[in-house]
Image 1 (cartoon, rainbow, N blue to C red):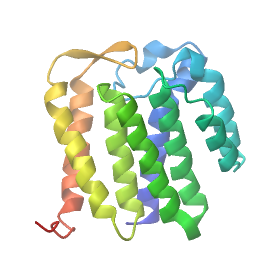
Image 2 (cartoon, one colour):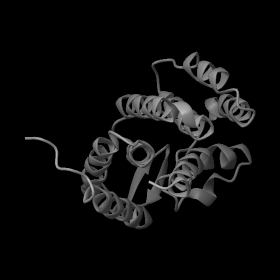
Image 3 (spheres, rainbow, N blue to C red):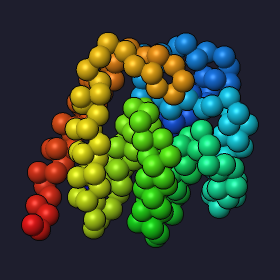
Length: 201
């Protein structure tokens, strides 16, 4: 995959993750109600998210990850922290091209931890699918495996997005735009999968 395409997807993933942080910080949460897939920072995690973002911006990736790991509590909100750690690894993959594959795979591992931590929240699940697509775009070998995982995520979300609205990330959101976004990403990953060899039976 081309580098601009990969960067665009990492940017999109990071944007979705940080949209809630920024808007919660300035008390404009209501402006993201139509972005049902945005991951919102829990109030208790805003300071942590801000500090991790600052460390990332100054290329202190290990410190950002350690801060996130030491903040895991085994309670609500951990999915948000795992998503921040995953985003940190994906951004690190762009900065460190020599070990890009290593960082990308670690990003997906923490995406999967986010999924395990909160498997019923549709925004969290959708963003795990987006992270799988980032991994598929980045990896020279093994990317198709992540495209297949993304496809499963988006296909499984489809029936959950048929209502008019749903609860996600502590708010009620309309689902029409979410349905459209999910379908667009499903179509895109299915196009990418056409270039992959079929898995062995």
